[in-house]
Image (cartoon, rainbow, N blue to C red):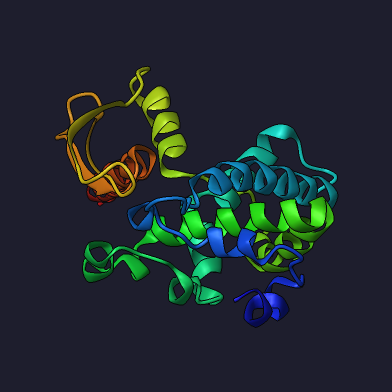
Length: 228
């Protein structure tokens, strides 16, 4: 596996077991076999440092307030999943039969977790230089796609609420299902006296963002009607 992925990762592994472990889903753990969860934990931190370094260098004139939403967009699950799909990481995942049968190779969380684990494997085998080379290459394109700082739905909704009602949006967990490694959250978002919005996501944050976006879309529609 290490040899097959070497070109895509820009690194030839001395310890091929590190890379192999990066693709072991928790469902496939048995005996002495370890999952990629510890690597995922480390990779998340390495990614954060490398992305922060990239942003600091590429946007020297921007304040912390402008850099923060850029950072959030580049380290979130969707960004990791995008890179994982580009490199066909799903083909390398080691899954239990149940996870395989339920579409585990296409699961967003599984792909994002594997991507973080690969970053950690690169870091442990080749140091920060190896991990940063991988990140600098694959994150350069999404970083350059929007020349203005991106805004997430929750931040935009919060600003609208403060400007129009002097209050903040309220989020509640309505339901949580699925195993610990692949949860599904249903979140209710409320703003003043407007009807609540319900949305689901693979994480609490993702579900909150989706619910906030629904409310923003409704508010934009209402404003358009009022203007008409």
